[in-house]
Length: 76
Image (cartoon, rainbow, N blue to C red; front, side):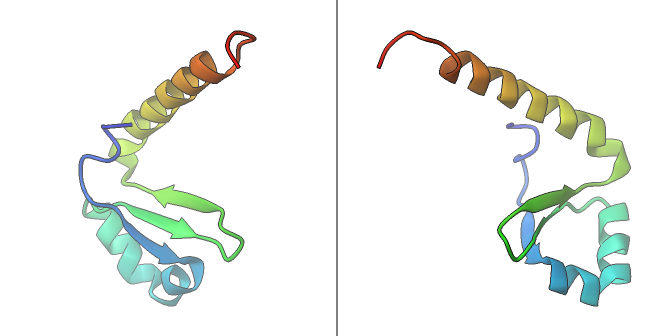
């Protein structure tokens, strides 16, 4: 997860993103990343295409760690 969170990621609503879609797409293509939140709380991350693989790998690593520490029958 550290690879994703190395720099600040701006969070905005879907409405904000849609309102200035072209401007946000230009910013994403220039290297910025955004967390875009739905009204129900779900969110997606918009990252430059060149950073997608690193982001996907980092998320998979976090998922593996979460499973390792929570999917077992030991402890309380």
